Length: 491
Image 1 (cartoon, rainbow, N blue to C red):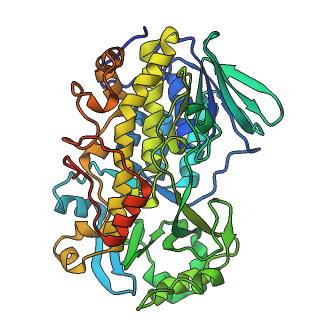
Image 2 (tube, helix red, strand yellow):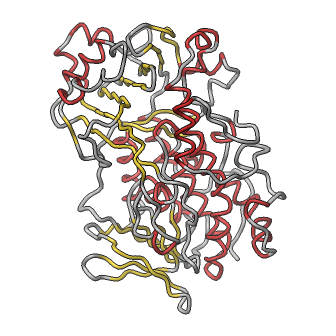
Image 3 (cartoon, rainbow, N blue to C red):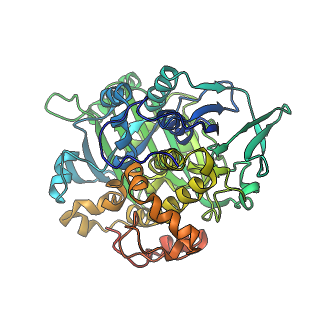
């Protein structure tokens, strides 16, 4: 059994003795990269396999919750870089989809203050994907973590008699370790080993997303003036949101970048791929379909000046909660999107992927090399109900964004933005593992079902009792504006 730290002191690399645990990570998304540096910090030996010839640092933005960045305190250089790239002093403004302003520009900190939250401790922030990936890669390089590129994993396996797990690549090569972490995204080849592939079901929806250098706004001075940044000097990041019947859009303006996104019914040109692009005409010809009142003309002007080969048309697929995240011998484990995919409206995919990595690295450090399967089982118990609840939040937020009650919004602007409940953003996955590891292990040894554990503080909505659910029912409820989250306090 490894050592247990129960305080919040900063513990950089070198604070933990070598565990002797060999960790093989498949995938270089947020889950995989976080797992790599946290496993190194916890004393484990790490290798990474990546199917592509390089790491894709392109993309636009995602939301990173406060719970996903608490571990940064242990990484001084990474933390410093994060502060430099973060959108401090951001503003937000809200419109109906047709362009009518509903909430005037206001600092995000002021919105937090209005709803009784600490403006100095926001629940999270939008971050630019390219900047976050460069930040992570800088840390991976500083730690000398080896990434083997061009290694497409086609199968996973484990050998319980030898206490090893491994993968097979398309080149016929085998790689083995004490534990294999499958962080290779939706459709992971590992799903067959852990209990079967979860069927992808089209949501009937897609997202247009684009990010490009700010100088392209010079083509339209009037639009550039409208999309100016916030603050008295027009030098602070500005987020503008548009909400309409079954639709929403967002534009983020930073000093160097413009990002926009918009959800829509499928048109036939979308794919579940971050490299599949369409041209502006495809968007302009489809964005008003099914609407009694068209989109804000200023949004259309933004679409028009978006550079060629920039607009990603990403089809949204939903997968029911993965019933199992581990192999029979618990030496292969899914994390991140491979374990639990999220709707974009949830604002939780990146956050929960990072939490997974932090939790797993910690459980392995506590358990030690002789108890790897125990660590994996315990980690999954910490994470499963929390993640299914976070997934359900995506449906609640989709209902909120797509069926906005503007009369209520005028009285309470919080109703025009996704819910970010405290049970999500106040969580610390590392400390939670240290505080509750032994108690959770005992529930496993006693054969207590995961949904009947009652001796550990919940990291999900207080009072919630786990109930299985599926995509079809939840999506139907979104369309009818009748989403029910079940028992417990979800706020």
